[in-house]
Amino acid sequence: MANISDKNAILKQNLIDAGCDETTVNTCMCLAEQKKEKEMQFILRMHKKNLLDNIHAEQKRIDCLDFLMYQMEKGNII
Image (cartoon, rainbow, N blue to C red; front, side):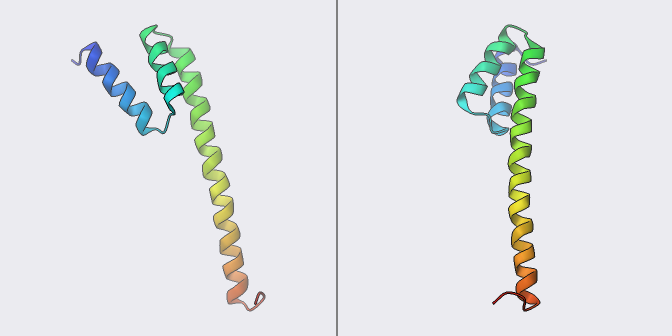
């Protein structure tokens, strides 16, 4: 079983890998130390929502490019 230090290192690396900024990482680490799981889950849900919003915005841009390229192939543009 991993000790507290190992668990903290794993948690911190996972937060970094998930794209959390330094403030979010530090906040989550403090909450973990205080065993405030619900508060940490709220922050992580908000981070996930922001990531999904970014994905959806990028998908919309890709869809616009696909439509533009389709219209160009059909000779409707240029």
